Length: 541
Ligand code: ADP
Ligand code: MG
Image 1 (cartoon, rainbow, N blue to C red):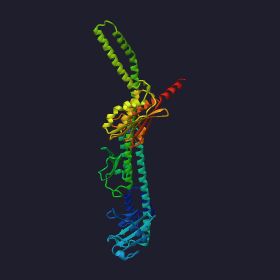
Image 2: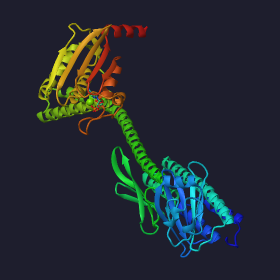
Image 3: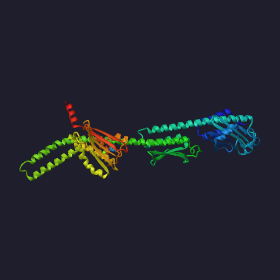
Image 4: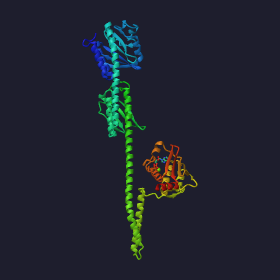
């Protein structure tokens, strides 16, 4: 019965070789069924494979040489056959093996067989629980099965089961390796700092086709914000699987893998379920890279802002230097102009000219004073001040604004507050910045409480609002120059850094307490005048 050109050993070798390739299941089954058809010299065969809860069925015919996938059946059908064992007949009307009644309807073990086949054999095999298979051999002529050929078919069925298991494991292993290689490549590309987003996404797209089952007919496409990154197109689009790229809850595009040739169905169309999880992971990775690049860009902007601040400071120093240089000669010009003006019997025209010189010089001095203020080089003019008075004077200007925005202004001043040594103008700056922040935090109204108190020789100013409050994150950054959560025009992010600078320069302390939705409390403390003077004396000694 068997084909003389190949013996059993050679056939086993060829079949195992097919399994070892780890090609997609269909390719494996086509090769194996060709080998079996020719070896057994039969007209048709079926291969059934256990696939978890279902059983896939494949049918090959010799003449014409064809191979098709049949409908799946429940795995129980396969398991029943397995329980009953091998069955064969050389003529359905006089069956051997199990009950002969079944065969009259051209059924064997509940499996319908086309009436054109007279010799039919059903040979199940099992490797373990998950790996069971069935080989059905069909021939048009009667009398195909002898005890020798039945033994051979049983052996072949077992060999097939073994090879199918091997194939399954090999395929899974190959898929896993491809998947890991792909992920590794993606990880490698995305961590390359010097590459821009375009380059990284192009690279990721290039990693995809080799990770799919049929690399030679596969191409990949990543679409991000309408821009397309694709690998070389192969054939016409026949099957596609895709996953959305979601960045911060927003769909920004998708990753797509396309087959340029028709392929039989497996899990999701012709795609494996592993390929579905891989493409999902890739889409997430792309989103991650986008986020990373954005953070990087944000950091660059921040750095640029800091450099800008640094430049400002340098310009400030320069301005202060120039101002200082100009102050001297200006003083001279002013002094001499004023002196000259005192001269008797000056012609009126000269007197007018001298007046012009004096006014121009005074104007120039004012400009220089402002320049020094900008550079914050103007030394604080510290005097003994009453914090209560500074605060009272300062908030006077906010009363109207508070009333307009529905903010209740509550004052609570300590009766006899100790004096502090401070620059009143700078204290005013502190107050303005803190009050403006509080007002801005209460766009829908609320209560602004301003109080002063004294504890352990420290004068304390407290400003509390019932506004939006701050998260831990924001709270950690409020003193960073240029940190703002406000719109352009509303905030510069310079208020609190300046406040911090002034308070520190006065030997004071600044403390914030805040929770989102629960308002903010700010406390500024200054040492009492006596204490400071006492310490300064100690230092001098
Ligand atoms: P700006 O007011 O220009 O944004 P600031 O340095 O004054 O800059 O404040 C920095 C940030 O601190 C603000 O953008 C805001 O997020 C937060 N902040 C300051 N004060 C308050 C407050 N009273 N309530 C809520 N958030 C505040
Ligand atoms: Mg502010």
